[in-house]
Image (cartoon, rainbow, N blue to C red; front, top):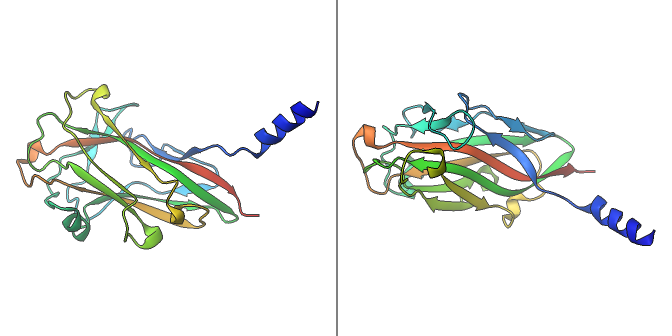
Length: 207
């Protein structure tokens, strides 16, 4: 009996990561699923992304993905992408009386095989928790072998060591800055797709 009590006590005190918000991009920039005690806004675009993205049947999962033609992504460095507001963003708000710990941000990207100069091949992520001063993660976007579901590349950012993203209340905005380090190119060669954006963590009572 004592062994059973100990095991149950451990399980009762365990905390498991959950999906805070998930964007599937099935003909919508609205969240597909949201954790209880969280409010999530639609995906937004900085003015540096001058052509509002559409939706493509070429996807990682679900029905569609978010499709960019990138006629406005001319920044060649992270600094200029930030200065030109070349970002994709989303915002979540934790309900009053609750806190959140964030663990990972992940998404799938496909940079089309025929993508030439001008297709974004770099990204960096900032948050409103420090007024977008310090990146919480970055990466590069390789050219895909083909344009199928299995050609999307998973990008995962570990947020668990970011102190400002732990035990916080209120709201937070994430900005994913994108830029083509190769420079400009023809519009029809600057295509890439984003799918299955997922923020994970835990939400718990502040009492």
